[in-house]
Image (cartoon, rainbow, N blue to C red):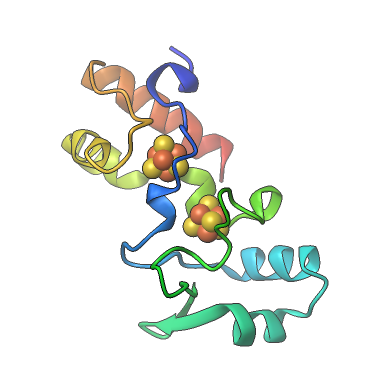
Length: 129
Ligand code: SF4
Ligand code: SF4
């Protein structure tokens, strides 16, 4: 089963609002800064907040990510965390997380066997390493 069979993003933006914060890696920071034609330090100052000593993307007053404007305005270079969703390690640790995540993401299909979910997650994680 291919990835789109168990997940198809509806571009609703619900995952770009609230939650615990979108962490950015060093690689993300460099890529997004280059995309925005700024330097990495400036990018962190202007577009991030610190959470647990690590930079996360800032949010607007309405709770949405600073880069959400009816769509992701940095889509080609969005953080690894955003690219991976919903194919994340926590689903391999406990496949029930898939069903829980589906409660917050309308793109996730739930009438799929646990084995297929795990297989798809494994494949996508390998692709996005
Ligand atoms: S909540 Fe799910 S369907 Fe909506 S934008 Fe995020 S990934 Fe796509
Ligand atoms: S970077 Fe893009 S995909 Fe990630 S939370 Fe912000 S708007 Fe959403």
